[in-house]
Length: 308
Image 1 (cartoon, helix red, strand yellow):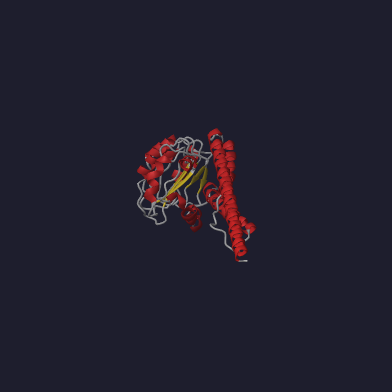
Image 2 (cartoon, rainbow, N blue to C red):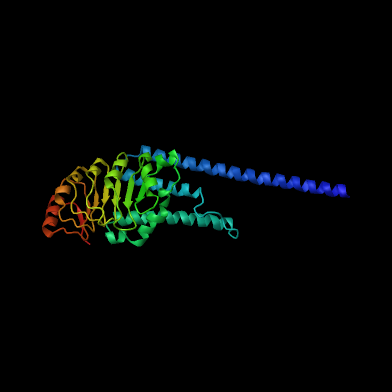
């Protein structure tokens, strides 16, 4: 009887070992499949970026929508919610993951809609936007060295000068290859920033949108070197202390949207009179006089001017 008892225990342990090994193999296989899916998605995103004619507005819009959807799929291969709670079913966990991804994409969409839709700077700089910059993209300030693929594929970069780890991100700036949207901001108005140095580090970016926002007294002028971003179509300079724009701005022939809201600027015409593609100009809470406004309207008759 004792012999048979030991035999049964031995069989039970063997079964448990087999079962544990089986579970580990399934987990490994699932993880491998997720990695393959992520690699395929990244490859497709890279292909879209390399084959799209970004000067064609319709093609660029279509490509951005495709990249947005692929970004959602890429995030879904991970787990933005963390570990699954023990009392949560697989269906509930999957829905929670989907909701987290949708929330992130919606927040970014809200930010872009606010900027491009001609809303006032007050809306753009509202608490949800600052929180979105801080929370949704805080991984940009991570002290972990990013892999080569990530550095080559990322199209959005946020430099939050109020972050204690921002220098780690600044040191990596020249390693990014595909940045099309660059946000330079701070959570505490008046934070020091060396725009000349940051723009120099970004000089090879295929930049299309540049945001320098919320610095107030610490930003009094715009670096002349932004004229090197020939594909720039949006420039936002909300809530700074800029009194004039450099004449080099006139070389940005692709520029369509310019926002200088909440700046003590009084004269713009010498810096923008050759921007024939400019369709939106935001001058809310500036010192632009009626005479200067008249000159701008005469020089750029097809440009929509936002006064409030």
